[in-house]
Amino acid sequence: MLRQWRSQSHVRWYCRYHMVIVPKYRRRQLYGATRKIIGELLKEICTRYGVEVVEGHVMPDHVHMCLELPPKFSVSEFIGKLKGKSTILLHQRYGRKKNFKGLNFWSRGYCVSTIGLKEAQVIDYIRSQEKKDKEEQQKEMQYY
Image 1 (cartoon, helix red, strand yellow):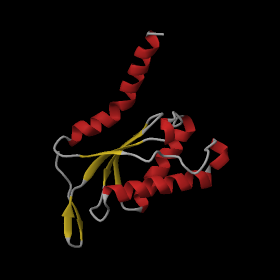
Image 2 (spheres, one colour):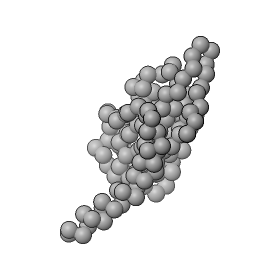
Image 3 (tube, helix red, strand yellow):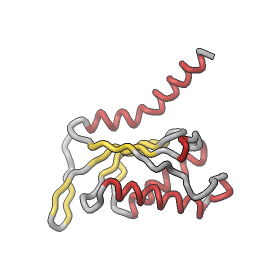
Image 4 (spheres, helix red, strand yellow):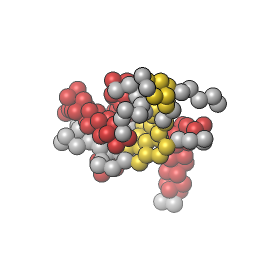
């Protein structure tokens, strides 16, 4: 796969990161219409800051994203903006309609890794995450 380098006035860059963020208390609340709302909000915020969403998937209790982040942002700075702005927009737009409580939606932490030579493998992992999660749930249900 040929990498597409980006340019700004004095820099050429190719910075992609695999990020995982989770809701407060890892509540399984990202499903149905809420799942679509969260996905659209995160894409909207990324577009607003000039960050490309290469791949993304909303799971019931976490969100996987592969982002192309310009070097003008630090990773922690951008994740803070992404989580903060999405929480504010969620509460402004949907508030009580979707039963979002308080102004804390995301947990404080996050997981991030750089994507190097195995980019296709990471993107495949993000795409297949939901299938693996359902298989694990079915195995757990067999024991009950």
